[in-house]
Length: 206
Image (cartoon, rainbow, N blue to C red):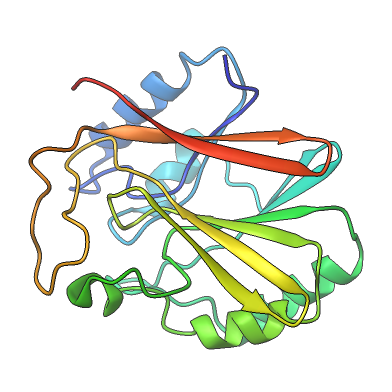
């Protein structure tokens, strides 16, 4: 019984209206608010016709900022100078503990082929975040595998958490694309209690 559900992109492989209608029906069965973001495989106009996008969620003692890293026609992602300036302004106005969510991972995950398709301006993101100690973690999709790492900044460490896919899993630390045949679909749980964040991955049977 989650408080909210966040889907971090790649809702559809074929970008068809039927796929988004199906996803909308599945997500709407949750007994809680749900939110989605675009990934590199998505068609944002079809998504917006069914369910609105949000760029910020108020989580009480925490806030969650949703960043659009999709670049039309490309597998890799980018935030861009304007959105990064906007992010800095949003962080200036509120110093509550903050989570960021985006589709593309903001650091290398150790798979050469996937690292080439990550966030192109990740160094600019980290430079932006260096002034804001309230950012505690970044959540991402795209990589089809459980992932956890930390990035050191002048304000302390920022955790980065990747989420398993609800479809095929990618084999970690590979030079070329490979499926992880032994791993099951899953999702990541984020538990916030006071200023403490804990997280773990749950696997499901397909």
